Length: 214
Image (cartoon, rainbow, N blue to C red; front, side):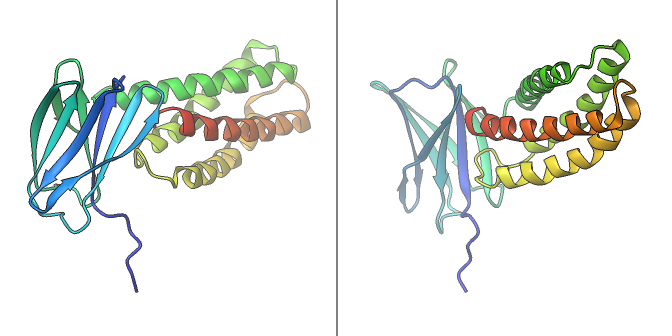
């Protein structure tokens, strides 16, 4: 039976990559051209190493009439080997930038709070105690959800399934949490808000993981 797992890959992240930026990977067996994907300010150059996992390799970056070669060596990870290219400085760093995950989690969390907060207001919640409970619950549940998303594959197509599973778990936590912690209005309205907020959050989350870096 054929193995359907993804082949080993090198993923190079470039922020605000110019249109004339191109890359190739040179291995002992020949050149590898990338699949190129873009999400907001990040561009991903994905090189699949079919049968070349243990071959030493080098990344060739070209921009205009200039080119530079970076030695990659043999792949360290089984699948996704991530590097970050600083276009301005011309440097290549293994892994992602140290603040990348924190910035992306904060961005997605802020957008989620704005969306769910607007719905919370439309449901008629006005008391400070209600808003404090709303913030605490969502900072915990949505914070954990978004941090979990950031630990997955940068380019994987299965992130939406992870989002679905985590949103179901968040919904199961938030309904009783909102009912118990928010005292304003009847329990039915509080439960309905939690359900509506998580449906809206799931839709927004689907757009965010499509349009924004993860």
